[in-house]
Length: 278
Image (cartoon, rainbow, N blue to C red; front, side):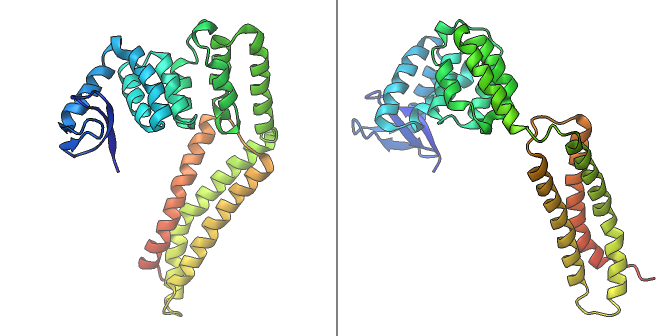
């Protein structure tokens, strides 16, 4: 069910409104109100810079009374209207339960902004809740955040923690054979996947003279090839572990490989329809 935030024009209590519902009865005052008018009040308040502190205070109270959904909607509107205000952006992170996507957006917006630690008293609590393997791909942003937000006497602690997480996360991927074997796998697999089209047509032409259900062989062969490539990627990851960044060459070859897998699956169908008989 799609919901949006509203504010009753009669009693000025916050409400959760069903989208596309024109009128509703306010559960607080019992008056029939316009959903559009209730939503317009919220939109107006969240776009008013003078109302931001009041809205933040209301969101804290609303969270304790009704849970995070309603204050999350309100703060999302505030952050959308005032993307350079850090306090509501952090509260949005907190209300999301430190969701990885919301955390990354917050870091991207504010990690490089220098602040007096007294003005960001939540900085250490934020790091304590977010520094784990799930967010380690944002290690550089976390380092900048520590330098720009955290008290000097605590910076070494958090920087060491980030370094330890990165080291544990990428311990095996630093092996030079990791990239070499992965690029080889991408190139060889891409060639095989593209070559499957003519192979399937030739195989169909030969098998169609001997079998009625010749295309079943093509399906089995296609599944074996694709499954073997996925298995090799999995084995590579188990042997060489995780990676934080990749080169442009590796990114290009990875995209070609992924596209070639779609080509390989399509060749099973088209190769069974278009036959080459020698």
